[in-house]
Length: 287
Image (cartoon, rainbow, N blue to C red; front, side, top):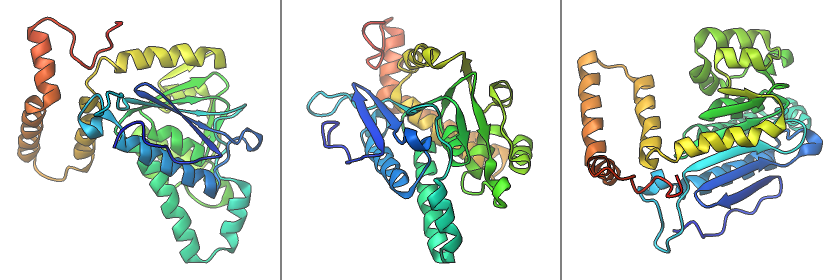
């Protein structure tokens, strides 16, 4: 399997591979990139395809043909808004669906959000305009968020008499208990300043022209970090999130984790490069 394999065919999501970076763009601007079944399915396929071709998953920087494996994924929305949430037709259909059909729809959404949240690459979202409901879920699942000053985020499900349950675990992990509970109850839009304050984004820029320089700065920094370290940082965090054992057992687990990393190919390269006063092999040569 190589990065040159054919990507999945899509019509509502654009995927561009630029070296070790994957750029994914929601492409329903006339519908404010609202999520329908086709777009959700395409996003799942794209996330699966890019995850399999990530450097962290493959534990290598290049495939057998010398093509780079992926290290970053950048998610955008085409047009005025990032993502207005669920498509109105999908919401209307949900009211007429059987419980089994609604469960299948929810499972599809969960595959999307979990696929983005657990993606082996470092994930960056560029968010302009609104990110509502499922759009807020996409935001919460990414590792770094650059938002514009006109950003508006909402867990808007409560306005429809439902709750942000499927996106809940990911928003909860990003914001914490109190902020998640308040936003789920209010279901109202928050602006860029509050999003920055509560941790729903990492950086706010004045307008869309400021997005690309901000992303480039983040990408340049991430590329100096070992790709397997990026991937395994997510595994380490999940271990902390789920830990139910004793403090002593947790300490033992972290010792085992550290030993595994130090003995890995990437760990050996990192330590050797430090001692030899040279850049590690994953650091871009033009730095």
